Image (tube, rainbow over the protein chains, first blue to last red):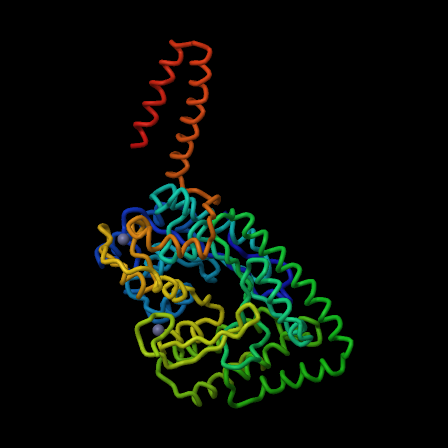
Length: 332
Length: 159
Ligand SMILES: [Zn+2]
Ligand SMILES: [Zn+2]
């Protein structure tokens, strides 16, 4: 089995593709009703399978959240769904693009992601890991309901797939509203990333909603084909936008200037400027900033990470100050 | 107002999210807001709470799951099922909600190894039954008797 080292397609529009498989083990209550003893039993079972499997033990590192260092914890936390990390195990690749969580919301969460669009490859990795566990233990499964999960919404394939897209041109042209309605009709879900303001950096998350009565293959195919249509529209809209080259250049460089020199930056302002500069990089208006490195800022400048780095509780003003500093250091 | 995600702590933060073109306002406690908004921009907002809201309208029951000890009240308040047996124990209460979400669909996706064996056996039994009917019609009683034994054996394996 190979690691994800190469990219998916359409990096200039797609931030990343991600797939999660949710699994529970037979004859143990789900995580929300497990005793400490049962959690430890599950940890032991999974650790055994991990250490006897050549692929898993070669590519993934085990992090026990009860004994890990702060740095390890901060790294592994990105894979968890719940804030509370007690009694959890995380097996993760060094880039965090493949991970397995134990005792999170479900007994097992198998996840993989890659930069750009490549859902098939990402699913392949999850599916292989799923097979490894399936060979050594019995999953909670029902002929009609499929894989049994803590939330009935995930019954069936218990597969969640999503693609994160940057759609500044579609948003500017005012087409997102109509597009959203179409996507919803196709049985998919489109959401903006969380923000207090409406101007959210034009970053959208498109994900599958259907898990029962659909195969994994079709579920991924549906999502992939809709995402490709959206990408085509975004490319068209960008070409239109670029017609006003001077205006776009002005907005791009003005935003880059603020990112490079500001002394205080709220998360909302960052997202707004990030979106414009990213469009500039993607359309080669800006040539000396690496897109991957620039996207990494998204992970670095969020409040939690800033607080983790400072190892302290910070006031809002302090966070904005540190955020601006980090951005400056990364861009200059 | 109580946090719409964990249903436990007092909500302090208001978050806006555009969902399918409509703006959705979510009230969260500081712990949940931290884990969702600030820990990771891309976290998927789970739908547990919506599930729980659906269940609240279901008839109340005092039943308790014999395997995990969850009461129906526990499931409603946490928005989470207690164990795989809960799905059977509370079938009356939960199935309508499942139907609301998924319609009458049944699973057609991947199956774990254990389930594959069961469905293969079921298929084999069905095939043998067909053959048996033919044999009886053709009055091949000796062969039919042998086949009947085979079916019995397969069926007892499934017990
Ligand atoms: Zn909460
Ligand atoms: Zn139960």
